[in-house]
Length: 397
Image (cartoon, rainbow, N blue to C red; front, side, top):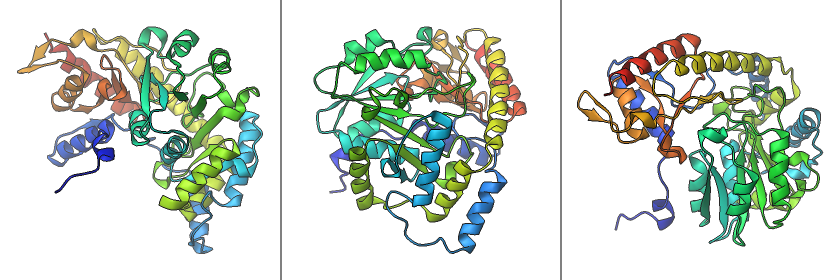
């Protein structure tokens, strides 16, 4: 009698949220846990953005908003895309949602039919395949190991495309690896996609501003494929606004209309006050974004240096986001304190319970030979966490 739907039973719970919950439980027991499991900036939302939200409350921006977002916010996004990315969009090609996560899910639900295949490079963000399953599509994975800097090749993409392929999800800068596709690399992938007119590119660019290569490249910058690209972005990462829940798509109008129809039936428009805050974020001074980016780059250099000092870890040098995704398979089969490490989930639990550092096993990201650490935390926490991890891993024999 108490049976959930088949749709829900196909889904897996979020491993990142599960690990965060487990670390919170240990903290509640008085154990000093350093949490490196959650992908969230540790900065506060900049003051001018908070001030815009306070003003919105005082000015009674408290009623239902249009489903795709306020015109003022959409205009600010259009200006941002033009000024920062050189991309021309109309307000009718923008739809605002409750976070970039909803933007991705809206797009998948709007374009995927039962049996459609969606290509997802591995490692992937945990929710991509689950969203495809929710839409009754079929995830098709392309393995991009650390030896390829976690990026797929044009040859791999060509080999994965079939007559059933409907979409490619590309996240750059990447969660969980921090890898960034250059414009040249995107162009090579684009040239493959031009031969397959049915394939839509879902370009998740939520980490756009957290990059260490000087410039962000977007698949939408290529005119010959732009009409098949859905750009996903938002305010969560660049402006430290994860809880405000504002994301958007910039896309062909037929996709926007479909997502508008869908969103109109199950959430309507996003929070009115959050939209006014996001408008201030996009339209205001961008120095706060650069200040946070510089802090993340300093932390990245710190954690990469410390991780490379740990015997048994294979480490690359991420070019964006705030994650390190070391290869840890050299520890599989080893034991300590009555525990045997069989996979990266075991390793993450061992690091939590023995080292008191919360990370996430790579199994959740489709790469069981790695694990993810978020360095969106203080330098002091990074130094102490890596010391604990080095000691815990050193016990494994």
